[in-house]
Image (cartoon, rainbow, N blue to C red):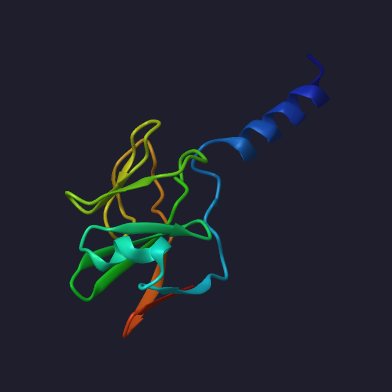
Length: 127
């Protein structure tokens, strides 16, 4: 292999390597109406929905968490585990806290966490 081809291949591998991706959406700002059928699971502690690449989960009576749906190790959708309020990647299986912090790898970077506010029957999620 020529040195130019080797350099190009090395550059591709380093830019495509796991944990170098930032798959989390930015500039998030949406509101979920809990009375709409697609959001009804958020009326129950442990319920979750996905909107704009963000998992919104109800973790207590008046507390929600909003976390990027895409694993930071590989571009795979994580799932909310209501039993222990964690997020799990089904592929490798990295596990994250309700705040997106890595509990076990292979992921080394946290999931992006978004702000939430509750007003009546609405949950606002924003960057």
